[in-house]
Image 1: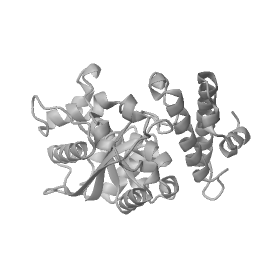
Image 2: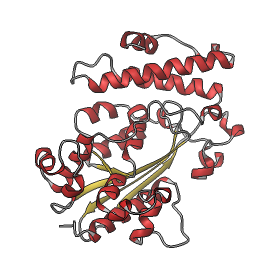
Image 3: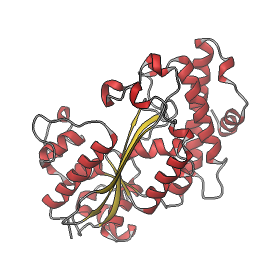
Image 4: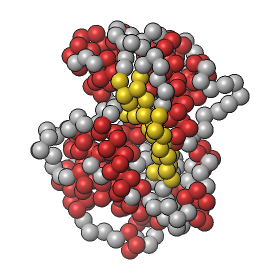
Length: 321
């Protein structure tokens, strides 16, 4: 799909309720997601002020697609590759994360890491890290942000340093369409969230106050997340103003999974099937998760585990100022 066709798709007046059979719903979903991929790539690649459309148009198309997926049956799409989920942060993002925590310029970090971030492991241990960050984790009903819902958010603040302690925790649940009272909450086998946790709660996309508060926190301080590309992709399509703030440089993601892969030498010698960079595996090696314990896969619990583990890793590598 070319850009003009994508804009036409996003701008069209479509009422998913009129799409009554699976074939029509499946075709509409495929068309929407093709348009979303095209529009997001074009919007990100355009200079500020020269974007082909507003990001609000892209978010509204994602909202419409979510409704289509609900009507089609999200359970039928589990084996379809996510189209709006980024595979990782860019090299520029990874370099900027080091620069922010080491209070350097991106150019200084690039001189050590290379523009392709190949030697970012060298850059991470070149100078002490410090500063206030916000750790955040979300639980969702799908991998793809244009198909599922954010149903749980946990966040907490921490000043990286020798005596760091997380503080000011926040957690909240958000609702789902009523049809999931009977269907059950998708991915409950992972996050264990049940309908009783969500019943009567406002859906995240409708909770403008929660969106604004989270965006304010993420704009005030760099945010840490384990596989931050996941949160970043979801926030692009679920928080009003996030994409715009991100592009303007007011939001700085820091991927603790990438920190683990770069800094912890064990990730390069442990078997791939052990998933050495997963939060659970990493936390066990750093002693922040005891033998027999498991990662909770619930927002605030995972934030606290992540912050404790990255702090332990920084301490183990003598990276704290």
